[in-house]
Amino acid sequence: MVFVFLADGLAEMEAVTVTEVLRRAGVDTKTVGVTGMTVTGARGMKLEADIPLGEISTGAEMIVLPGGLKGVENLSASPGVRSLVEAAFRDETPLGAICAAPMMLSDMGLLKDRTVTCHPSVAERVKQGGAYVLGRPWVREGTLITGRGPGASIVFGITLVSALLGEVKADALSEELLTPWRNPV
Image (cartoon, rainbow, N blue to C red; front, side, top):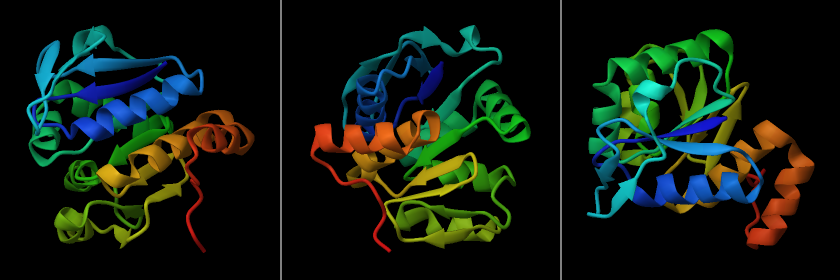
């Protein structure tokens, strides 16, 4: 099961697009309410979560953290989310973080000497945590997949699919969505 965390202030495009891309690929994906079962995004959209945070213990196939500065602050303020993120890093469970979400990982001390991408507005803060920041749409380093921002939501989602189901499935999904997903060399 893949869990996409939802918190008030999130970037709606990142949460909705990534969830749809994963589901289109046949990945069992649930949205998780962190600040409640109904969250209000940064642009005022209301999103209804599939399950509350309290229903997750362990056994995630992947965890996904959407961006949106206020949303990331709310994710970071949750001891439950922080515990699940730390467990994912410890257990090498795939973890996706897009836009401002790598900032949370950096603040937690999880990105030292890691190569990532993130929204330019948080890049300096992510670098302060010891990460190498690239300006690419997505970066995959081992089990960590990062995305740059809202405009990269589709290719970030396809990259998550690649990590879970392989590049052949990601390529097929890329064709279905009419969106090239591979980073330019």
